[in-house]
Image (cartoon, rainbow, N blue to C red; front, side, top):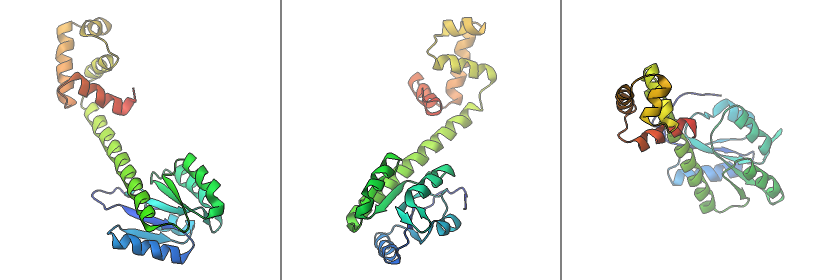
Length: 209
């Protein structure tokens, strides 16, 4: 499976269903609204031809040749795919669709489904994928800025992130309060923020606290 890094790539909807008529119908639907789509008849075809590193989402039938859609979904998660998944189910597969939602799928659509329901679900999935990629990019930017800090600036930043005052930081690090203020000013510049709130927000992106 390809895992190239992509920039400025239009999101693609991957259709994974062994029913050729469904793949053809959905492909025509996405073509009519200008959404790139690629279709696959089996999990093997998907693994050989899809690029899970690129923006997009997956429409996945719960019943595939040789493997259930749920098992394949878990396999995708295991190998690191972050693409949002929408399951396609028959009436008898609704319990599987519910389980898929519990496992993190965006939605499940019961066959036969309305075109608008498909488009609505895909819109949600693509928005979720875009938001997740933006969050990853923002975190990477923060880590890059952190790398520009000196060891002492990192110590000061860690203390600030814990809510310590300048006087407390000075005592903890064995330096003067004036020196702490100088380091804090340098940290603010290098982290490209103007307020303490913005600094703490950036730290939250990588620490979660």
